[in-house]
Amino acid sequence: MKFRNLVAAFTSFAVVAGVSIGAFSASAVAPNTGYATYTAAVPNGADGTVSMTAGFGNITYQSLGSSSVTIPGGSSAIQPMTTPFAAFIGLSSSGQQYINTKMTTNATATNTYRFLHNTPNNGKWAFSLGDIDAERLTITATKSNGSAATAAEIGFQSEYNYNDPSDPTTHLSVTQSGNSVVVEDASCPSSCDTVGIAIWLKPTVSLSYISIAAFGKSGFPVYQTWFATQYKAVSGDVDPFQGTPAVNPTPVPPITLDLIDIATNEIVATTTSDSSGNYSFPAVYPGPSGTYQIDATGPYGEPMGGPIAVPATDQNGAVVIPTIIAPAEYEVSGTVSNGQGDPTAFDVEVLNGSGSVITQADVQPDGTFVIPFVPPANNLQLVVVGPQGETSSATALNTTGGNVAGIALVAPSRLAVTGLSVSVPLGLAAFMLLSGAVLVAVRRRFRH
Image (tube, rainbow, N blue to C red; front, side, top):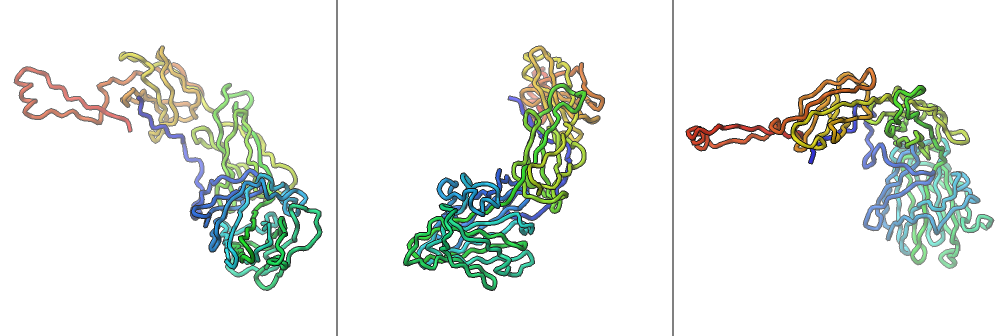
């Protein structure tokens, strides 16, 4: 068994400014549409996370007083494109997650949503509350400056029936006063049959919190919550042959692309190019030119030039980035001389200037090796590694001039393994010397 410590990084190409984001990662996976995805914690989903479109910023939520919070997959309660909410987002909610909040009669379930970053204030996002009948909802919000949002700023838009969007009947009483929006079916609990009745809200100011207090009026009420944004796809391609004419006729491995929010210097989404060089960020929160940039790195983390500006994402259609030219990757080949049996027991590793292994190749039965993708650098080294971690002396490697062939390496001796000393008791050593025996101290070295 060979001991390897492959480090999939060649150089550090960019440093993203540290942002305190609680439990979230700067590279959290974003939804593939404008609709949010949800993760509920157990028990009963009392708290969880809401993952929003790349560039919007994620959300945490806490539910107090609810009997349970669940996350249906979007196959039963569906907002079709004929509803004002889905039309605003540009996509039906079919197959999209939402939150179900349940409570009991005379109980209040309060869901508080905390935005990881204060919400954008460009009118490109909204939230919807559905199946409002046996509960009274009181909606409040906190602005980014810490003050309470007014009812008008909370942004109530309209009531509608997602089961029958053509139904013009008004079922709900909506009171917008002071710092709250209160919504309920005034005929309930005497008559609670308004299945599919929903409202949608589009805040007009930047928010840090939204709170929804639901008071159960009859039976075991449940209501639904959708968060969603308008969105655009950002896509492009990588020339996998490093330009025309090709530097290397073999396509390079996938290129990593990070979508950066320029305002926060935060990675909001990460993807890789496919075997044809294509890549896509399928859902990016709309913003003007200068909102985002793309940083691309090669297979071993090598930089690929300066950041790539992303054009404005608030126009119609997808945003297409010009072709990115892949970095030059060169081929290194040679032979390994081995007097200790099967050459395939060895491999050849490439070390960068810091001594980290960036790639490797197995030695073939005829003693040859080929390493196809080695970045250009003048401070690389080659070492041969044996089955127990024994290593040869390092051979300098310079790939700045292109492919390097005909390198002759020598496999390490089994006795060249160091790091483990074999000690002999003094009495035994004296006995062996008196007996005319030869004492050999062997030191074994294992690579870590």
